[in-house]
Image (cartoon, rainbow, N blue to C red; front, top):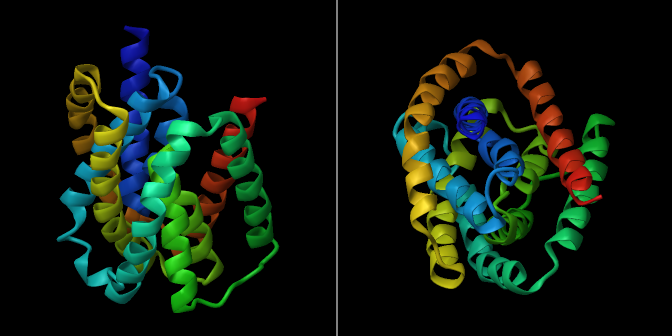
Length: 238
């Protein structure tokens, strides 16, 4: 019962954040799902439920999508996705998560210190590749895309719409790759189905939250989530 309550709480909070910001699910859900499931199960449950959220919101947020940027992110992810699954299968996850955690914290600190970066087509593709690699390896594509968008001062509407559209592709392909190369299980799909009611509630509450938060609070929430993901990845491995 305790495990089910924790699972429900994780999925609800992550769904609210994903709906209201476009990026919260993998950052919040994946670390805590690892307390309840092995890495393969945690990653695949994350992918399945994140895909459900993106599919549910795509028509509502389509006017906010930067289609050109989504295409460039997708092109980059096509290279990153297969690299990520190779890393997942052969690399020590402890070293990978430590490295990612340190990098996220350093870049987040630069953002807080008002470091900004100019958006270019080449950087769009590169970030898409990094996000794709992290999706199939640790199930967390959000941090690199979020860091990049925050560094370019992207509005909350464009950020949410573009990230969710990109996730629609990257999560679907990542799930196919994960199932094909790492296998899947009945428990993964049953757990994902059990999480659907919480996702629906999170969709409703997240939409309300998105309408109420301003750009400044949105940016603050971004920093909090980035620092949280970086610190958790470090603590988890130490």
